[in-house]
Image 1 (cartoon, rainbow, N blue to C red):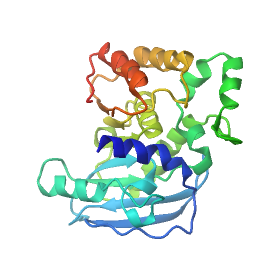
Image 2 (cartoon, rainbow, N blue to C red):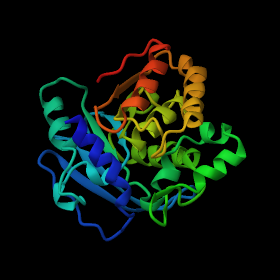
Image 3 (cartoon, rainbow, N blue to C red):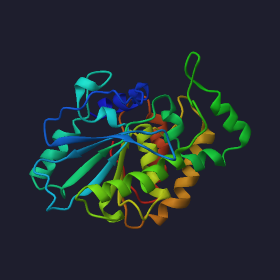
Image 4 (tube, one colour):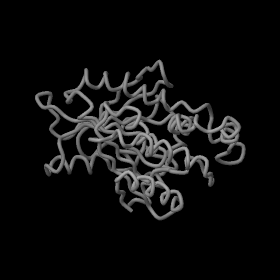
Length: 273
């Protein structure tokens, strides 16, 4: 299952932000699409809001903000006809009273700008400028650059905190405040989730980081590793009450996940393999 999550997350960048994408069909609960959702910080896009079975304005719900939103709910609309089954899993957990009731805000990625939107910006900017320039020259495939623009993940997080969250808390029956909000993503979405938690410790109670793409790029680069490690070691201690979930599979990421797990273990945080 974790290998499937990893595969889906690695391929999510192939999607494009497209207003004409079909509405989603879910097995549990229902989806409401907010389109367009305009932003002054990042490219405008739609949002899909999943409401659990029995959603009621008379009840308050926590909120899970998930990246790479196209892959979450409906296999009929994904590039590979697979999905993360978020509605089935979340709906079942809520029905069995294993978790507090929550809604899911599904945020589509920026397509060709996914890497620029999700790569932790401050660790990137801590690299020497010549090395930053080298990273910007990397290719995902022949003649297709990895970073289609300058890294702007700080703006992406600000978009969530200052534009998406206020809208959700004004238009849905949800609990207000950081104690009731969580981030979640896989691969690059795992990177932006832990980075978002560190950047906004008062705005989120935790982060789910699946198959986190610790290399940040598709090559071995100890300078990138060290930038992430230094940032984590410096700022993770401020997360005294937040919860972080990390897991990893056995394909592709093994050397990098060893780095990530070691850095986290030094801070007293365990991960699942």
